Image (cartoon, rainbow, N blue to C red; front, side, top):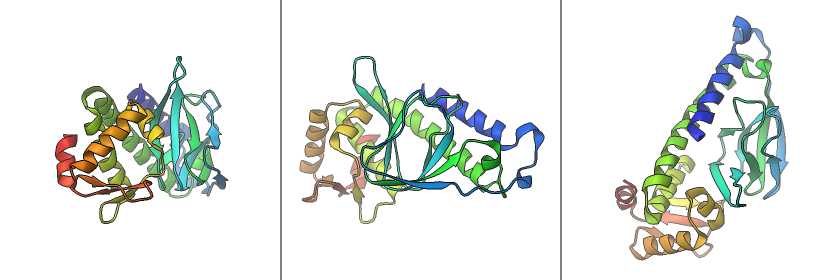
Length: 225
């Protein structure tokens, strides 16, 4: 489902970037509107019209869907520099909330915004969609084939790469409940797997528990497969 949504979004962006054969350079650039959100504040809800798309300036965002039995499945976490909310249909298929205090750059979903200036924004959106497609495919494999420890190892390695972690230290803006809902695990399974990785010397948990130090990235990569 995630792969299909990303592909549809990509097609929609291409059609909007150069509408009716118009040249991208003919339109004026748009800078977007900046807005701040508090932790857990809703950005948009599933079913809302897709009138805008968003770039994270600071903080973090989770996109998720509530299942029929009330469980929450977190589709993705969006970090500074990343774009989200670009969809192919007229309505959002997921809800979005700020994980922590977050600042966003909001662009209207319209041809002039996408085709403005030298097309930098349009290329940035296409690149973001391609990354999202790749992550969606990786996430499907993770949910279907990996154990709890392997899922945690994969998640931490991917987060470290996206956040350009220094000295192996990865800040965790999300809670363990968020991580569980993203990886298809219970909170207890996440805590148990994290504890096992710590005991094996692969990670270290600083006192604040809001960060993880990757002590043995090579071993984590082997575990993640």
